[in-house]
Image (cartoon, rainbow, N blue to C red):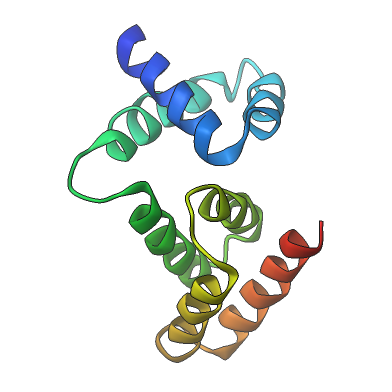
Length: 122
């Protein structure tokens, strides 16, 4: 493992998703899943999220659309919180979900609207 990349990833992951969420994810890791947590922290958060080509805000908007398309509710809710932490507004989240309603389908967008409302109300 590249400790420098992992540490950078852990910092970004905490800044975007919040320390409580990250700590819970890491604490829930088992011998079976720990390697995946390390992989995600090192490569997704340490490498991809630290690239210069897009802002964190833009990455958040893209993630919301992709997670809606893939119907990944748990990750979607985490990334709604992350998007808010990255300066994305509720109205911008709504517009992303409106875009997904056409391109990904109504049921996927309806589910994401419901999940986003849960985050907004918490």
